[in-house]
Image (cartoon, rainbow, N blue to C red):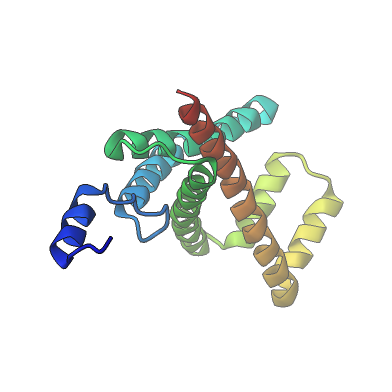
Amino acid sequence: MEHSADDLRAMAEEAPAAPPPISFHNANAVRAGFFTAIIIWVLMIIPLGGLPGLLLKLFVLLGGGCLAVIFYNRRTGQVLSVSSGARLGWITGVLFYVIWILFFTITILVLQDQGGLLEAYRKQLEEANAPAETVRQVTEIMQSPELFSVVMVLMLVMVFAAFTLPMILGGAVAAKAMERE
């Protein structure tokens, strides 16, 4: 059975459009991720120390992935697959990391005007009653451009992983929970 061009156009108009994939090309996904990243940023700058503070911040990062999926679902009505929820969590993590990098850079620039990064770290270590050997090692690292560069790159990679991995997991868990409803 052959269909005319008009029949094919009519069938195409009747078929629901496939939702766009979750990526940085999907404006709704980026919007949900960005709004969530801002909320996470506000929650993460609350100064909480020790193990309870660390656990609470981990919970905030996990919740960030969940919140992005909820925002996306409310805006689009689309229930995401587990892999799409994980991608949305990753997008949220990347956007949060970009916000964090921006403020980290501003902090370093401000510290340069106040005696430098080395002096700020030395003061912080002394206030924490760090052993003199630790202060000496940190001073050595920061005075060696090669060593300091390696340490900074490793730190930035670890921070990226620490921010994005919980959000990926949170996004996947939220999508799985919404699939069941």
